[in-house]
Image (cartoon, rainbow, N blue to C red):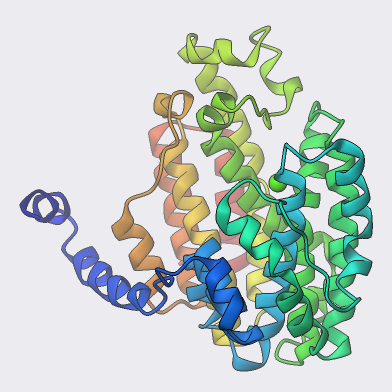
Length: 373
Ligand code: CA
């Protein structure tokens, strides 16, 4: 405890936010009972909300901060894509069976009583899939306008999962394409859910390219951050066109820190290039709760990129931002003006760490578009 106080003494404001966040997260503490047991007695509603707490507590917190009308559609959108991802990630599934399941998933959710036994690489995921009919039943009660969106995105994402089961990410174009399937589509789906609800109305949200970039920015940040962890599990998501200019094999970057840093920074600048679109997207949101839901992950991503920039630790471990920073983003009020100045502030700090033309260009763009203040 004492050590913690020392640690945060340099950031006194963060302590307050941390305490607030602790209380908030307490409300969403998953049950001690296994999901399989909950599945036996709980209603479909209870099961879905418990399943979400088990597989992603932070997402279950942020969904509750959305307008009431959007909570169920977004919850089911998440659980269904999580189900699809569970199929994709299960390395013990025979390839043919996996391919079939991915292909059929979007039509299966539109049939009654669909569940899968023994699919999933953790117990929580296996329990989720074994009780998936509860998720499906709740999904089917949704308004048609939401089901159309969820079905469409599920189908498109499955196409990408099948494609990247056999394709490697080579060029920067492949990197965009891969991230479109795993994250851009989530952004596109969310925009459509916002519009369908009538809570958001700006026609810019219909522009799939813009929503896609919201997802790309987040996904690329995770991919850069998780290099060491992914390499440990023999997964490679860094585009080979970028690193193969410097080394023959991607793990050589761990020994050759200088080249490693050139690659990391090149990838970071590529991710930063999505910022103008991300800001344009955020500017078009009118509902305060929807805005928070979209802005908080973006703020955490840019903060993460700053921490990764010129940081050799990226090559050997997953570098995370301070919990107090996360708490500040989670608990403080957000509006577009604050977000623009936070983005600009972080970019200026990055350019101070090491001067970079691409970063300066983005800063200039922000100043010409949203003013110097
Ligand atoms: Ca996956």
